[in-house]
Image (cartoon, helix red, strand yellow):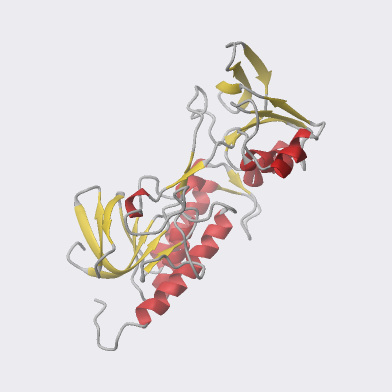
Length: 315
């Protein structure tokens, strides 16, 4: 495998990467997926998914297993490990896995996703997916008439709080600074809502539960260190995402947040390198939009590979 020049390598195995592989495999591009450190992406750490078309309710890990088996069925190959270095200056492109194994490809799809920033407090890992989440759109419906906390003060936190109003009127926002960092319009929507309680200069320092689900939090004020325990059913962490773009920044244009920039839907600034999913999409960040982008990237890669000069080998 190391000596072969692959037609297409897909970096990442979440919804974007696996959908790209399904389309690419059916187009006889013999795709190879490099799994990354977290095969399956963020959905592997979620509970029930209820907004995936055709599935009224399915566990996140089960959905990703189904997609993986679908890709395998059409001949997709998988290799473990994380891409730590690339050379996109010369063709065929070179990718190094775990600073050891080197692979080459005529085209590459970057679908490495993004990693939610964590609070790093006791109980967060224990109850991740059991009351702690980063996606209000995904999980908000599970908290009808429940008590929820949104942690953060940016646009995402404001959007999450506004979205959660569809299901509950018991919403608390906890923000570490003395004022929000969200846009003025987004702030006003929340500040003027009587159903949303706000604590500034505060942070969640512990998440409590009954070994099955979240039951409460400890909030600590930053100015005087006083603590307050609150009975809570759900914690929505909205302190940002980090795009997994570090190995590619030397060659691919990224914005100030590290998100890979694209033109014409999936094309990077390097011909033959395509991008799909949360590694460039900081707006929608949904499994279904990532899957759609994976489809587009595969179709674009197929057209790119088909455009090679007649007689040039792709094997």
